[in-house]
Image (cartoon, rainbow, N blue to C red; front, side, top):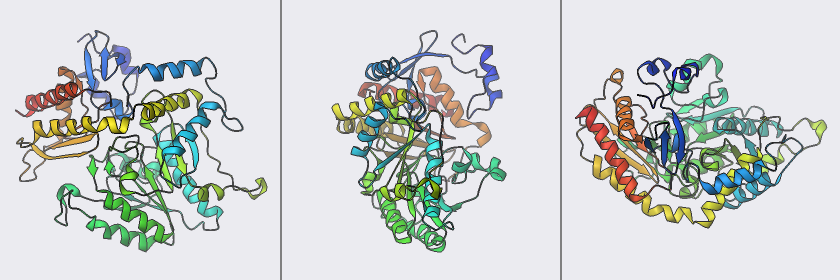
Length: 447
C-alpha cells in the first residue's frame, strides 16, 4: 500500500500506539486536509469522523482561521508572556469571559489540556494554602474519568489503563464511583434520571470536607472513559455539594466545550458555574495547541499580594499565550458568533443521532447507543443480552477501525466501541455516508 508512511515513520514513536502494530499496519501518510476530509499522498480521502482527536470544529484548512494565523505570523509569532501581553491574547480573554458561565472572570493560558488541568489543580490547592488552609490538598475524581497524562492529571485519572503503570510517580487522590447510566443501579433511564446515585459522591465529600481542595469532573460526558454520559442533574447536585463543603468545583471541558454537547459549554445545561473551567482542543478549531483555565476573582485574589508575601502563582510554559494560537482561537470564536453555530448545529446533531440509531439499533452485537450533542457512541459486545464482552485479545474495535479506513473514514475505536464526533461543517449527506461506512465496517468484522 503505497499510501502508507515510509520506513522513516518507524523512527517516530507515536502516541497511544503499540509500535509493533506498525509492522502490519504502517501509519497512513496524511498529506493534507480540507473540510471534513483527510487526504493521503495518493489523494485518497478519509472522513475525519473524530475531528482528529476531538479538536477540529470548522474543517481542515479553514480559510478564515488560516488567514487569521497568517496575518498574525507576519506581525508577531511569539513573545515571552511573563511581563508582556499582546492583542490576540487580550482579545481572546475578552471573548472567552463574555461567553463562559457567570462568575468566571480571570483567564490563565497554557499549552494543552493536561497542562490546563495541572494548572487548575495547583491553583486550587495553592489558593487554599495562601488563605491559611494548607490542609486542603486532596481532590475527588470520578471512576473512568480522564483529565490528561501528566503526573498531576494522572493523580485524578479514573482509568487504570493510563494511571496504573505510573502509580509510583503519582500522588494518589480520592476516587468515587461515577454515574453508571448504561446500567442504572436505581432503575432509571437517562430521560427520567434525577441523579439518585449521587449519594456516594455526597458521602465522600462530607467525609473529606476538612482536607478537600476540590472535585474535578468532565461535565455530562466522560470521553476517554468509554463515553459514559450522565444527566445535568448530577452536575447540579455536585455544584451544590462542593459549595456546601467549601471546596472547589473544577469543570474539565477540554473535550466537551465549544459546542460538543450541544451548548457552548456543558455546564450551561445544569445552570452551574464552576470555580475552574479548563478549556482546550476545539478552542483553536484544531489549528494550534492552546489551553486555558478560567477562574474566579476569589481564586485570583488569593494570589494577589505584595511580592514579599511569596504568594504568586509560579507556574509557566514557554509557549504560554502564544500569539498565533490566540489568533486562531479568536477567529474560531468569531465564527461561532457570526454564524450562530450553536443554533445552526441543532439539525445536524439531530440527523447524526438519528442516522446512527437507524443503522445500529437492534444490531445483534450492539449493547448500547448513547448521545449527547455531537457525541454519539455505540458499544459492541459478543452477546449484549447476556452482557458478554468480546475477548479483548481479539481486538474487535481495532479491526473495525482498520476496516473503516479501507472504506474511507477515520473512525478510531475506543476499545470495543465506536464513536462519532465529526467537524461541525459536515453535511447531512456526509453524515449518512459516514454512518454507512461505519456500519459496513462493523459488518465486515462481525457479519
